[in-house]
Length: 318
Ligand SMILES: NC(=O)c1ccc[n+]([C@@H]2O[C@H](COP(=O)([O-])OP(=O)(O)OC[C@H]3O[C@@H](n4cnc5c(N)ncnc54)[C@H](OP(=O)(O)O)[C@@H]3O)[C@@H](O)[C@H]2O)c1
Image 1 (spheres, helix red, strand yellow):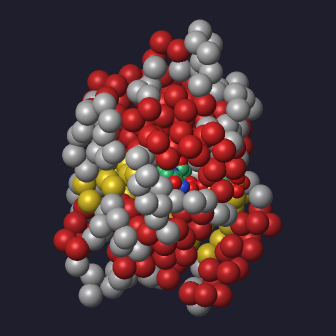
Image 2 (tube, rainbow, N blue to C red; image 1 turned 90 degrees about the horizontal axis):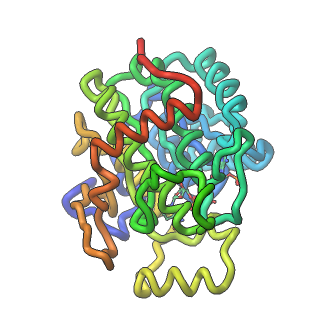
Image 3 (cartoon, protein in one colour; image 1 turned 90 degrees about the vertical axis):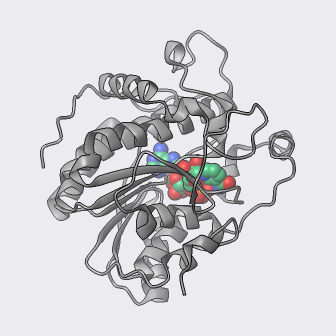
């Protein structure tokens, strides 16, 4: 039987969702074609949700969806194409999505890229900030009417302990006046994921749309596709040999953010190991949230910058 007080680093997503009934709920998981997104989608589908997972590689996504339908017996698992590095693509996706699904109950902003070589999105944004943050910002704001219709509804922003590596450097977000550093860029994008949850909660929390951010743990997935052997050494040193989680445990905090009754009515939080994490500003911290990532002033500043980057302001009518 589900007992949230016993949840920890090894708890699996299935254990978190045990006994939770998601029949009649519409769930969107970005980056559902691999890793944590795939397991998150599987577990939410297993609890009866109608799950839409996004993929850039649609055949890869379809194979994942077919596997989930077969293993859960839930026929309502679909794939939608989405490239978060293109504002045009996101707008097209959002209008197709809203036409098919006017109501959305859970949005898991999971897709992400880590420590890639310097590159830009289709709109000229630094790739990690552009796809991990700006893409999700625009998509979520465009889907807000569906989330408002689904209220009480939730947004889970998959951040990372990597946010400890950098605040959002407002003076030079795009690395135009400083040398590109792939880890600082990842850290900045993951801090932005937390600040976005804070900003969204401020705007929509009172209307029943609650947003939280989370760190899933360290899990071996395709996220490491850009890493060199020396990067793995760097990570091992930084994390002081912390144990990797299984994918099943790695998806647990996302599923916790998406479904836990303990979080009802709560938002603007940073979660890890299926708990609300405290602020930890110690320079060598292995857990917790940096205060710059939860700072409401930073969240407002990021919101304004993000609106300006996407060229749209959001008033959020239902
Ligand atoms: N694994 C960890 O240890 C860890 C730790 C902390 C945080 N996280 C976070 O957890 C999330 C999931 O990561 P994962 O470990 O499951 O990695 P993963 O297996 O590489 O999955 C990432 C997913 O994001 C998609 N994606 C990447 N860039 C995209 C873009 N521009 N547009 C649309 N989709 C895009 C990928 O699609 P393709 O398959 O098409 O590339 C893939 O489906 C990420 O946000 C990551 O930052 C992971």
